[in-house]
Length: 139
Picture 1 (spheres, rainbow, N blue to C red):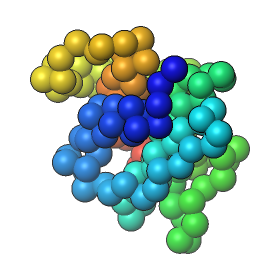
Picture 2 (picture 1 turned 120 degrees about the vertical axis):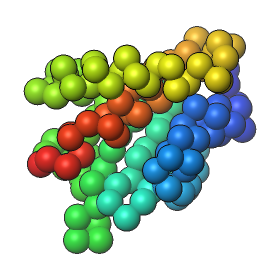
Picture 3 (picture 1 turned 45 degrees about the vertical axis):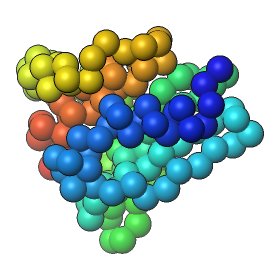
Picture 4 (picture 1 turned 135 degrees about the vertical axis):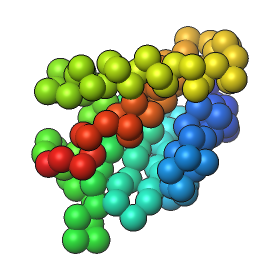
């Protein structure tokens, strides 16, 4: 089982590009009874939630758009993007193209040390790809 600190450190490692490349900052970290860990990053337009459900779905990345100074609702499928479902979208080809580029950008992190880190790496690559498409600029 992964500890809260191990989770936070791994998220920082794989999602640091949000801070370095896109000028996001860490908004908050939270945990619920060692069953859910979550880290949120934000900028003026988006909140990105990276959560890990230990007994549930594993790593989940959700992009919330900020509209009228409020973040979009979880089930607002126009303004909230669930990375687990993004490859079913009309933007699939654009994402696949960006995935080819993103893989090389994460090579400096080395080989993931666990299945959990491998899952985080895949989500980070996918998020990076989405950040470089037109998805976030269309509604």
